[in-house]
Length: 410
Image (cartoon, rainbow, N blue to C red; front, side, top):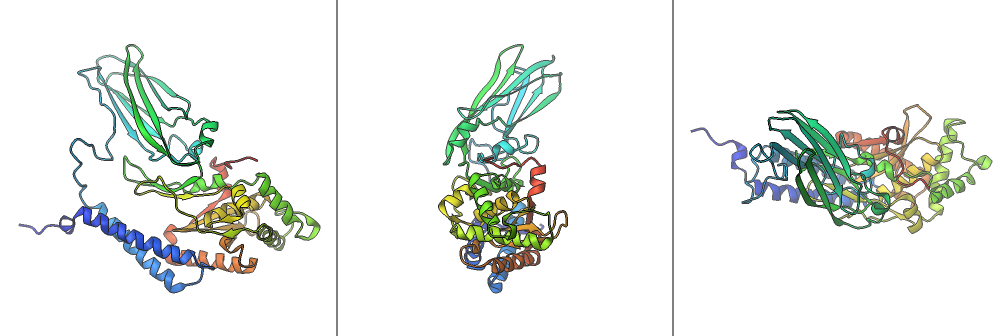
């Protein structure tokens, strides 16, 4: 008899607990590293973090090869479509529903593309002897408009509907904490009657919660959503423009001129923006915990720039979207730089040069501009050395071209 494979000897539940413990170790080390006054220091701690992250990735890769645990009696596996499946013995239609987003990222939901990030999909298969005219509807009770699709399905064919009901802006603005909502899904035979009308409870995150990534419940695939942080970059907010105007008072000629002069003038403007935030009293506060996300999802409570300016405090992502807002509001090309557990900001030295410099925004309240730049540059180089695969740089110009616009216009 052949020896069992290594994966046969591993208890999936034990592996799950081991991964959870390793994840806690990684998160603890990230907290230690990025809670330092200058996150670019502490090479030994960074190396230890890199080693522990490598161990976590190895465990996660090993877990992919393990068999899925049996589902509880009467429950379908998480990846299975939910909803009733109607067959040829009843109506001649087979209707399958699959939820793709759980929970709902309210803050950026309006920016999502239904082709790539639908809330749910409905597959209707015509197993009858005749063509069928079908109407599929979906809406979130009290929060969205009704999305409607109508199609004729030939005998033996199927239609796939990707649904992302539009949230009503005034209702979405009032979602300031995690709450449940009811999703309605209807499939109708237009020549007969309503085939299904089902409701499902979904969780809506606060609109200030942003997603780094989600794990799709239907395929277990990790989907990067960090580019939607671009929505938090709001260059035209009045309080942001006030800081830009104050920065203009700190440079020669008392104006911000973007790329109209020379590269040295660009650095001078960025330093003035930094000093403007320092004089506004912005200090670093580590407030990263968010609630409502399930396993495999990484969320971040992110303040809008006007909120950071009002409260005069910012964590790493708050400070990065704030500083990027000032850069973009000054007609300078900005970028958000993300590494596991941290974020900082970059700017293009000269327009279309693809030469970038970086800055650590958590040092605004405690260090001068030069020290913050040294830290940002060092962190970028360290990230390329230790974990280049997970170093993400989102250029604001690229995000705007993708339709990721500021969450607030004024």
